[in-house]
Amino acid sequence: MTTQVTFEVTEAEREVADLLPVEAPVTACHEVLDTVPIWFHTFALNKRAGLYTPGLARDHRYRIPFLPADFTGLDVLDVGTCDGFYAFLAEARGAARVLAVDNEQYCHMVRGRWGIEIAGGAGFRAMKGLLGSSVDYLRANALDLVVTPKERFDFIYCCGMLHRVPNPLGMLQVLRNLLRPEGRILLETYGVPEGHEDTPAIQVLSAGEANPGDDVHYWGFGPRTLARLAEWARLTETGDTTMTTIDGHPRIIATLRAA
Image (cartoon, rainbow, N blue to C red; front, side, top):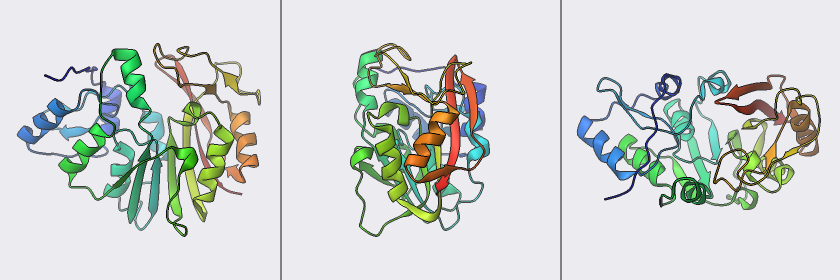
């Protein structure tokens, strides 16, 4: 029997999950729930039956205003996709093509925090099958991301991962090179503590400081930090940068465009 870790499905995450109502048969929902030992995203598998995946995210509602209501015709890249919620949402909202990328680093984090072994992409594959989705999945390190020479994207998600890469400026430069001239990047990452928002410095965290057992969480960013990194990467903020605190953790979210 597979050891599983489950989290309480919060009302906050139900609100996010309900953006993508799956409404799959109850039997199929239970099969999916039994297959994956730990979920990162909360999916509304069958709202009428009250069946949701028990994702560990506490409250992603602050992302909702930043999500395009209409992805029609857009080519979308989701870097750090985990279970793929935002990739599948883009597809459901009309994206022409969606490529989901993850280096499956979270497998090590899960082992370190909960002692659970999970196959990379397990949640993504389960949901892709349940949705009958055409989203493509690529196991790759984002800093080394290579797509076809002429492929560029109109919209790029970079959520919950900039603080996990050793070279954050290099990460933004890679994404900038994959962006079409009129494209945009939705960037969400770990913030800085209250009172430090105006410093342009990057906060350097110790291993496990943000979350016990998580030894690949390096940085915290403030608005001025992101603005300067964006400038070096030939990107510019659109003026919607927002700081918030979720479950005691500072977060920052912003839309970036090609400079």
